[in-house]
Length: 240
Length: 240
DNA sequence: CAACCGGTTTTGGTTAACCAATTTTGGTTT
DNA sequence: AAACCAAAATTGGTTAACCAAAACCGGTTG
Image (tube, rainbow over all chains, first blue to last red; front, side, top):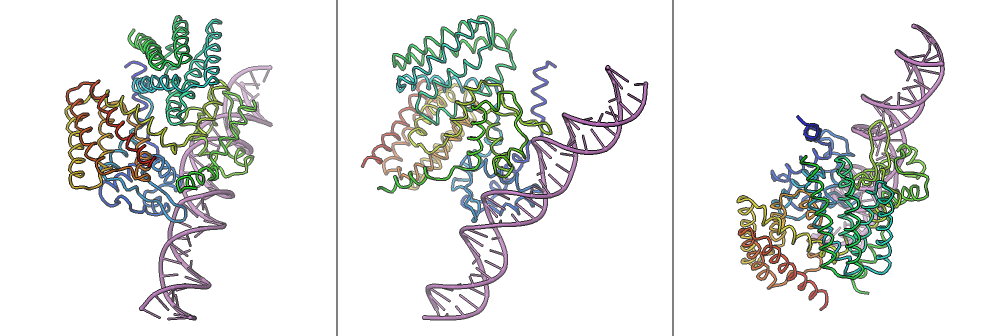
């Protein structure tokens, strides 16, 4: 068994957190009909006792489900199940439980599509200030590369600035959630090749120019090409 | 002052949660250089005492920052700042603090781009089973509409199934995070018009057909048209 | 009979205490 | 002086206890 496979199997064996177990149980309660949309959940205390776990974990699970809009808790009143249909809740819950950001190819793919759109939006909406920030980030990257230094930080910072220029906080935040895991995976897999940095420099320049020109299609195209480069480089490293 | 404006201003006045205050403070620590990338955070207890707040909130803040990859905590050892550059950390932290899903237009826009890509991926990768599930969801929607019933649940379920057919868990989860807030906003703004349902029926059929044909471009186009409909309907309602 | 008032219970919010594992540390031994 | 070992302090993980506010309920009053 190869090392990477070993690591993967270890991760899949890892104990599910108490929080996820609770979510699983809540799902069962809803699917089995004991808890219907609109109902009030049992109090946190009794829930904790019934599930044989501390209240902290129950609260954490509730928070998580609240973030996804499945529960709504009112202070001094109770926590209520959303009004969505059971089928809907069940589907969403299954996805929440399975949510992890360890699937590298899925991560890269999601990033691919989001960044292309981000480049497009940035080109359309960037202010002069945004442009200056992006340009500055690109120059920082170039300097590092020219000095043969590691520049993955600077690389990501460019993309962060572009996301910021979209003026869409939702878009920006979602990209934000992806970036750290992408970095982690890239670092783990040691993708950064030698000529990779030079190639990326050109790509960044093209994206910058398109955004400067406020040419949305060109920006999207340049970003796509840039990410394609990364993708092929990645595959080369994965398939020796 | 109109009601919606009033609500908005109330929301903006709302006290920032202890968690966000802590994140703000941590940001200050890092920006001011008292806490450098790679450093170990003070123990949760001393952090809680220094910030004058319970340890639960410190832990919650740490969890949140961990989710975004900015901190990494090892049991019985400590919590460590990621190795990212200070600029990077600062940028990400600012965005995390400002992250909220209350900007409806940003929400809709993010959904727009993500769903178009989701339709494209679904068309490329859907299995026969996926197709059957999507078709079933579309039929459920049609039935509700034909009976003049509210069908927003069924509408969202269609999109959930399409996201599921992309076979990309990251993509799916991100769309998942958006859907509840979109529903909430739609319900609040009472966007569902009379002929809206009929129009959407056609749109769904076209998307379904494109996915059935495994025609990625057609699926993307149909989804775009479908969402454009929603968007124009929305604007009509917002500008009476 | 209905409306209202006051105390009691229940709620989520918040803090403090406890636990096991790890790390540190100081002294002992080789 | 270096290596080692055990005791003590420190860590995040987990649970229990406390708090104020909201909801509930029974009795009283108009």
